[in-house]
Length: 277
Image 1: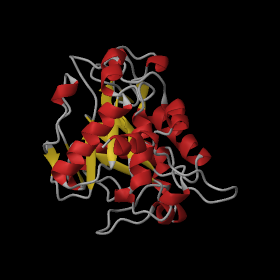
Image 2: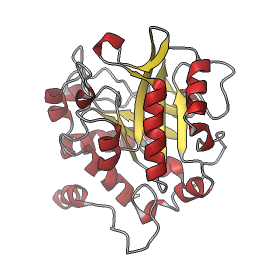
Image 3: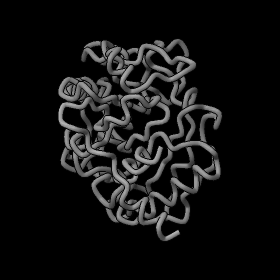
Image 4: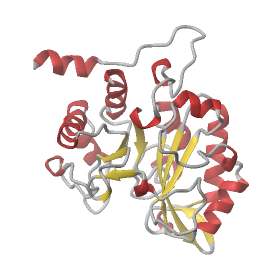
């Protein structure tokens, strides 16, 4: 048991050789089906302290998130005086026009041509202005055009120019094929844990037969906080939650959603998961 714990704590993705192709930072992931790849997800990615948001869930904005290894982004879209905007709850606590945020992501995708990103959109506005914002930012040119019965590998997605999977939570009818409802392809656990002991593996939304397992691993006591993330994010705490849920459900954790990814080592867990698969 001690050996296993030590191995998990030290496991890292092998470093690519010079000139070797990488996908999401690892040569080993290029030939791996998308649903078998572990991806670190920033919960409420827009709600960042250095972006001026109050009661943040992250310290840093999208650019720093990507630099650190985050490739999944939970984004809440609200109406802010007639403008679809990225806000958490009240837009008075912090707001960025959706169009501006998507332009930033378009630049990030341009500068990371060997990476696949995931958006989980919590949509509180009609889909038409959201779709229009994606079109205006040029992101429709790089989205996964539709969900197939079998997931392609990361390398195939990159070769096909389909490097952005966008899903939405509201399950709005008539959505474009590239904008599927999140829980028609994924399932998740409860997101309301207040203490580490509350972390569970029970199905909240979606069907456990779906290919993607979104593990919510963050603490909220009215709001999230760095102090709560310090309790939630140590390597052993995150890995214990992942291992327990994979054992209980028989599913691999696909997307690991965390607050304050820079505290503790949740991205180290993501690397270890990809190394052991």
